[in-house]
View 1 (cartoon, one colour):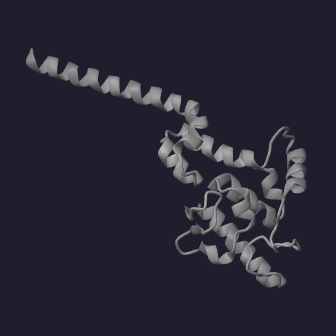
View 2 (view 1 turned 180 degrees about the horizontal axis):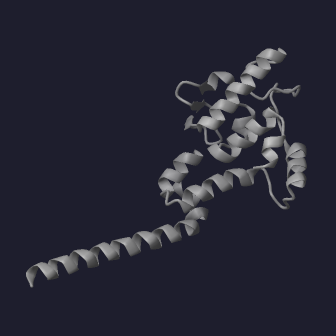
View 3 (view 1 turned 30 degrees about the vertical axis):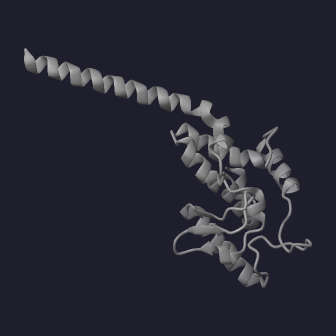
Length: 181
């Protein structure tokens, strides 16, 4: 996170969206300004990997980064339909590997890939007790089986819920027993 504060706003915004929204990199790279509702802090992605439109609430920090980026592009005269424009055939950025590798080197991090940012997002949702159904919705998957890889991260949450349930049952039984004596 410390290294993210040192990089240009353009890339910082990309990394924040990848990490804190869990959106596929292809959707981030091809993001258009018209897909963003700043009032609702909502991204509407009409074209996703599974051909299903996705609406995604974004964190206030991401919203603020996008607003700053739009203002910067207006000021520099580079504002166009794409949030992350480039001189590629498509008109938008296609890859960030070089910049990502530099970021990792500066942060002293090995063996991390851009897609791992999406996996990190999913892992933290799973560790927080998010159901597989909700997790699949958050990631834009049609099938909950696609997120079964995160099930092992949910075990601690299941254990805690079980302990609480057993505690409540015992407390209730204990109260009922003390009321009858």
